[in-house]
Length: 231
View 1 (tube, rainbow, N blue to C red):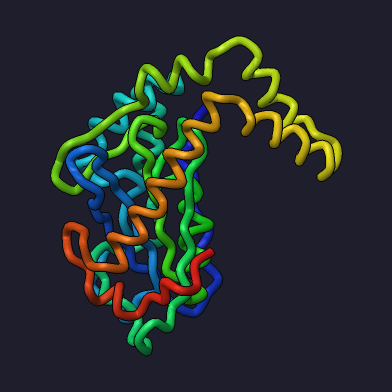
View 2 (tube, rainbow, N blue to C red):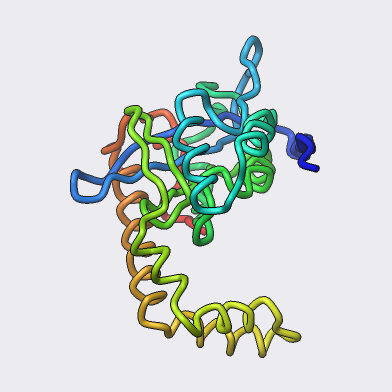
């Protein structure tokens, strides 16, 4: 009923490296996963969909937020990605790699769309997937701590009428209808507050990363990334 998927090999000419970073401050601690074109990955193993240290919080979060059972989480965790943890970045000129910021959807994960992130990295992009604390089903920080979907976010999404707005986006029959429905969704006070928080998170993450103010340090990635070209 829930087989272990096999990810397609990225089509770009570069192998893919991956790292997790932590940034922000004590008032709002942020975490991001970075995929990038790597040099040699000889001797490095492909990373599992969930790292060993983040598995417990991912299991708890997915069971609470999305109704997964333990068997489903184990199968998800067993996916082998095409990313190699700790690989040295591709030897590139200073500021050569354009940056893509990926922001997951409500209740999703920093691992969401891993295949797309790997594909972009294999073609020479540095991809930053940012986890939004409280709005993601679960996240595991590099320092070993974790967080799951916040109760106030659950109450926001469960408000009467909000599901109808969401279904209007999903059921739109044309780009014009989708735009109108999306504007209606994003005009909701609760959704706008979340959106503003996500924008703030994104700015803080990119600012900290480009300034080298993250843990663990990743000066080698910062050196080859072009933060004036961000998508």
